[in-house]
Image (tube, rainbow, N blue to C red; front, side, top):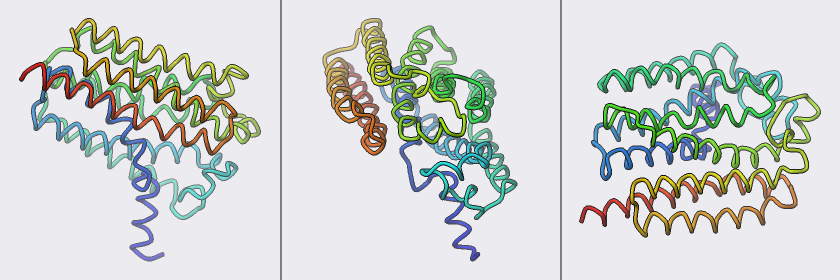
Length: 289
């Protein structure tokens, strides 16, 4: 294998060719930064969090493939991943995950102590999530906590504290992650049932679509409550209304439970995250102008 081929395999291991995971992790972090600052956050903090999100999502993909190295070859969607296909070794995947995590930790060292302390459970959650699929009936909930830790870290970095409002945002994001990752799990449900992997798509059973819609509604309801607490304006609530319309569009994609439309619905969540961030951004701009 040439050096270029190996670099390409490493890039596919950490999903640089599929940035949706980075975006879904980044949007709630940006919500947290803008709401914590009530406007434009500190530029250095913003850069650190954007880069840290890319690094930690990439590390998470590497450790995920390491954990699933004996499962992925039996799943049609994942059998061609570099580790599953034998292009790279388990040792290489672990070294990459460790190196990326170390870079992410070094990145936050200029920030305050509370942010650094919060990075420890964040790292633990990211590293342990892939193994929960063996014993936890709803690993998507565990992933939801892991994918939400950028929010309290954002408040800690920007304000030096983590107020109750930050944990409300964590709760909202938790339900959003359960919703979109259940859509993702619907794609692999047949394979997962064969090999004994546990997912929310299996746990919800025939209520899978209803469960996804309910999680989306709870997610948007909590955000609306956050808007009331922060006295947000029309831009914020307008964004939530558009997000609700996007959820309805997703229902049309997943109601027949066909794999490809379910995967498209999962990807569609990027627009929900972007719309909500745009609403927060415009609301703070017009509030301070």
